Figure 1 (cartoon, rainbow, N blue to C red):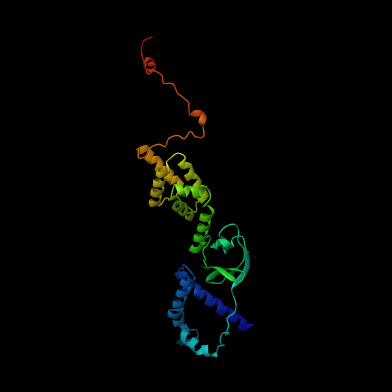
Figure 2 (cartoon, rainbow, N blue to C red; figure 1 turned 60 degrees about the vertical axis):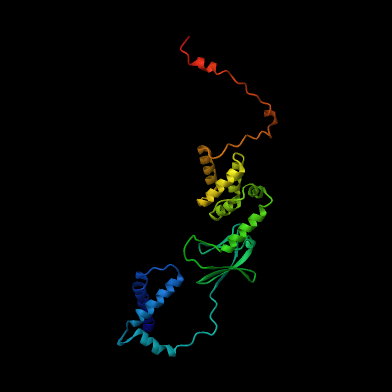
Length: 273
């Protein structure tokens, strides 16, 4: 019993020493930086202190004497990876340890296997690895693989090719680039396309194209920015107002508004009774 208490006390003192000497004076951005600083502290500080009970030796010297007596490590390391089944929802991400990791679009909505260790988070579809990310120890972070985002954008572009958005890009060639940039910033591509199509009802396609290019140059890829640029140009007289299209209202084609004599309005300002 005495030996057990003594051993426990030594362990507790060692833990306290590490807390006060190492953790209290350092900060870490990631696990790799932590390990790098821990090894430097071990070699330069912890191992150079006197061995308890024998000031003639350092901890490093005592460790060098003891090391040959220790059993070797197993030839094959123990499997310590966390393995768990996981199902992706309707988005491009799966959540693990309060962070979101991207997956290929083809894996959305499927049952997957998540394998995590201290450095990596891997996603498997059956026995095939479909995603690999550096593990994040932050909270509420989104860890993206650029190839997953590009694949999703390509699928959306193909799906929208025969739709109203595809026709929008035919009228406004730079619209596709703006929609991609807006999507990368978290905007809804469909919502942005709808607003651009509404602007085409009021402004000529050439003017909308010019405004889209200016919005891209200003790094404000949003339909609201395009609308502001068009409104500003209209106020400054940089483009003409689009004529009203009456093709859907044929009953107004023959509408005539009678012109009144302006003298009638002049009489309203007269002082005569």
